[in-house]
Image (tube, rainbow, N blue to C red):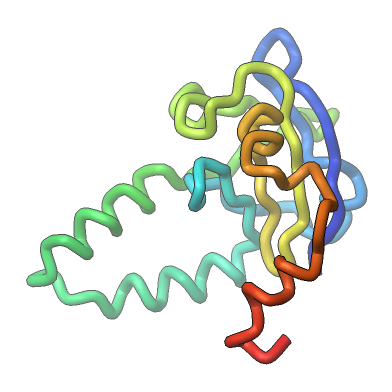
Length: 143
């Protein structure tokens, strides 16, 4: 399970590393892809394979869904790390997430999300004003 919030920044060569506490949990190989809400998802292979199995069941005749599959799969990369566990964040991913320099990693149960610090603040994820309203949003899931 991934959890917590970590603030980092890209270096001058657009390299970053996954924070150590998250890196120790995710393992050697992981997938990075465009996520929802303007973030990037980082997933261990077994978690992405669950999504890939569901994607594989979508009929080729479902043209709208196939467009979504194309977007998701074309955004997928397996980052190649250097000896210091840094990887280059591709321009396409930086553009999608609006990342300039400052990034926020958050653990979200079975995945890690990478946010531009600006979007993270804009969405209000950086504040703890009222967790009551957040739990109410999860009511239908009986949490």
